[in-house]
Picture 1 (cartoon, helix red, strand yellow):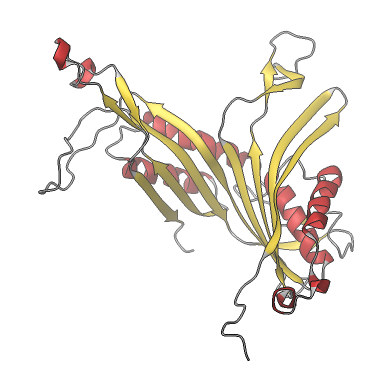
Picture 2: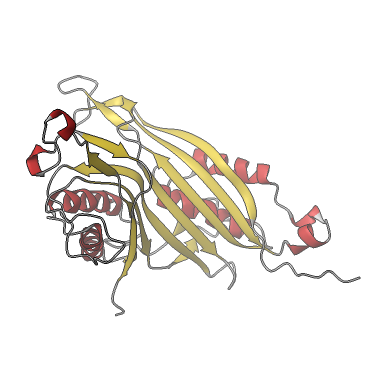
Length: 325
C-alpha cells in the first residue's frame, strides 16, 4: 500500500547551542555570548522515509562544529560573519547538504566604565571586566545556499534587534482615527509611548568564495565588502542609534508614522540594506482614576500615576523596501 503523502520539505539541526568566547589581545580582552541554531537541508529524505540514517550529520556533530569554529574562526566577534562562516562550512563540507540556516542571538556585554584606572582602555572601559547593560539582543539569521554548486555559494543575511524596551513620557499623540459604533477610545494630544522594538534589516545576497583552496570552508571565506553592507560593523551601531533617536525626537502622530521614519533612516544610512521590518507592540500605561478622592490624574500634565497594562495590546508592524535600481 502506497503512503498517502509525500515528504515535501525537511530540515533539522541543533538548537540553543550556548557559546561564550573570550578573545585575548594581551591584557585587552573581548567577550561575546551567543545562542546558536544551525539547521540543514539537502538530500536527507531517506532518513525520514526509509529510516536510513546514513545521510544524517548528527546534531551533536553540528554542535561540535559550532564550538570548533567558535575556537578557530577569525570572525567569531561578529555574529554576521560567524554565522556565515558556520553556514559556509556546513554546506561546503558535506556533499549532500545544500543549504544551512544559522541563527545567532547575541547577548549584551559591555565594558565596566573605570575612568582613570590603569586597567581602562582608550575609551575608559575596563580591559577585562564587563556587565550586562540591557536585555535587548542582537539577532542574525543567515542562509547559505549551495544549490547551484559548492563553487557558487550564496549568503543571505538579515540582522536586527529584539526586546529593546523604550518609553517616552510625552511627544506622542493619537487622533483622527475612524470613529463608529465600536469606538470608545478617546483622542489624545499627549500620551506615554512605549514599545519593545523588534527590528530586522535584510541585506542584498552575497556571493561567497572559499579562502585558500579550502574546499570545506573551515579556514574562512570572502564576500564583497562595502559601506552599509554585511561586512560593515557600523551597520548595527547605526541601526540601534537611528531607532533610538527617531523614537526619542519624533513628535509621533502614531506608532505607524514613527515606524516608517525609523525604517527610512536605516535605508538612507546603509546602502547594502534592501528591506527593513519593525514590529512594535504597544506597552500601555493607563492613568489611574483618582476622582473618587478628589484628585485629577486623568487630563494632560495632571496625569502622573499610571497602571501598566500587559494585555491586550496593539501590535504595529511594517516592512519598508528599497526602491528597485
